[in-house]
Length: 172
Image (cartoon, rainbow, N blue to C red; front, side, top):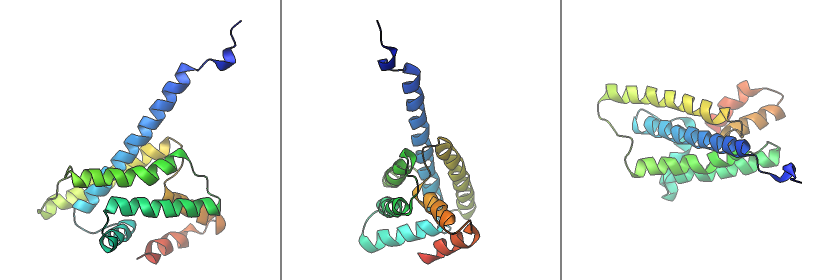
């Protein structure tokens, strides 16, 4: 007699592989969007300013700074009780890695023309939005920084209107 309880469900494995491919695609696209906004050279998002400052201060890459800060934030999120998922851990390690890969190999160009740089900045932000939709849509956990906002909002009884600007300017 066959015990069906121990037979591996092929569809389940295929679905999990598809889920992780979608997660990694979203994280790679997120890194593409980040590098596009950085290479547009029109200013940085608050977290990127922080990462760039750490990178220059400690002679590391911006991707390495992103990973280090992500690790610190994930530890803080865990202490504060936020759920840490595979998406959170993947985000923590892969976005910085992908950013360094893209920048080291000059896969995202740097332009001198201001009009092209503005278009690149806007397209980079669009890519960031689509990438977020993809990787968050998988449902394997939010990114470290999003998780920090979630846990702090829960702790402050939904006063995120005050927390978001405070966090963005606190580390500047």
